[in-house]
Image (tube, rainbow, N blue to C red; front, side, top):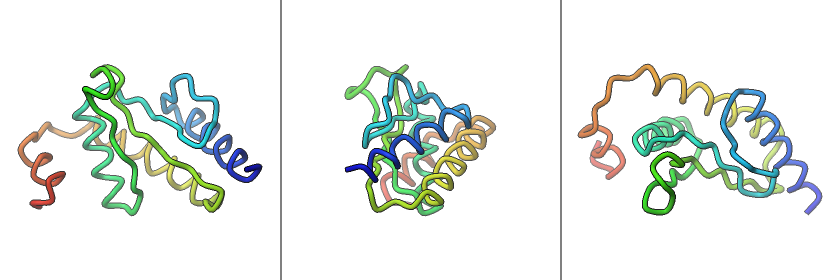
Length: 115
């Protein structure tokens, strides 16, 4: 439990330092990164999955649209380097998505496993 708590706090601090919105997270085993848009959350999750990071987008109706987010599940088995890399990749993916042209059809196909 102590290692899990350390990992969660490390991830939370790194995410906040990277400018990611972690909402009211206290550094428990699940840390959100709030993106405020379903499309943005889905696109970032897709990019991260392609880079070997499995994070689930949480979208309406589970949360309001403005609260769409990624939900990171942390464990005691994660290494500090993995957590730091996940935060860095997430910040990079968010920046990339913010620069992308919107292609809803292509995104839906990728998320459905079609492309």
